[in-house]
Length: 530
Image 1 (cartoon, rainbow, N blue to C red):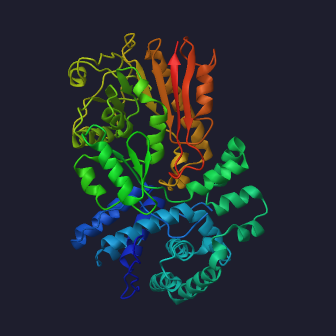
Image 2: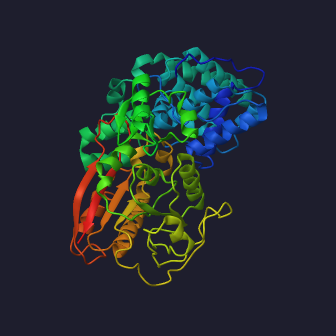
């Protein structure tokens, strides 16, 4: 954060605004299973509406100190929701709440381990009290700009008022013991001393589930795994993609780099130092001059040489269209975007209009069953986009439900030569985006990976079945898991592994390096059929 945050004391039965918002958002993540940014947006928007304050959620967050048990779920509603009804929330408080939420989720395993050093039976504490201790401990260990006494004060006051003086005294003792650890709580020596097993150390010190540590150590070796875990436990560097379809985009990119100490990334991107987006980004985004997109996402797309892809191109797992829009901005012939989620597709249309781009054909369909693009949909895409008669598709409108209705395959296959390139930005475990989406560590388990790999296999087989000879299949994930990445490609290269009888060859492959300043990791490959 750019300035020292205000340090209000908890009094009159109310939590300080930032802590109230953080506890409310974490309640939604941990107890209700909401995604972290959606939970934070809901809490901060609700506080702004109730108090007439202008407090938008801040998507990029930062840790002020260097940092390297599965999260306890709340069993009762957090009182933070009611506390927010009585306080205003400023931009500064919104920024601190954002840091507390993201920072706690990134460091929860380490923080829980530290607390257990001073708690004989943490499982017997009310879950709200345990979460309060965790957030305060995160402040003490990882946030330089917040004095230890301020973190102790609000948490002890809140716990005492909620659960009585006994738990208040316990909270005071525990948090003061955490504060006495000083720098030891942030450096590796103490963890090495108490955790002789190297993988236990990596799990606790880098706040990663043990199954993830095992996965990365087995796949990449302990040294690279340690680098990946360290990067994933820190805040990502914020980045934007300048709209290359607008005149003068190069000058805007150079200005952003010069004015804010940024560096170039991808085709038209700028990555800024960790600490937040420049103030002018919001207005430039509204004007369609740029979009927020992670640096690693931009780099994998650029590394796959999209200027060489032959059109028309079908983005078969488009989501909200970040990659499709980036490709359209640089003149790639994207004719069709499809996704099973109507809400994301509506967002794609909104973003395309904001950026001043011609909206491609947009249909709701699973990539495991290629969609039917006929009539109006094909016309909307322009004369170069062919029909693909496989599955009937419901038009996407403002009233289209987000959950797709079940549709059966109508038989038939795509006409040969329909799409010369098919982009699969595959649904995946997201293990490469833990710095930006730390809640994934709480939701994902090792058993999820097999199901995702099976889904990816079905999507790849469906795409190959409609890809003409000589066409390209582009496969991208935002995860680091051989079963979702390299093993998928090895199967397609095998004479007996792929559904398509035509041989497949690799044209280019890219994996984000472990030392990337983006602190996110993508895998991508371009395959040629026949």
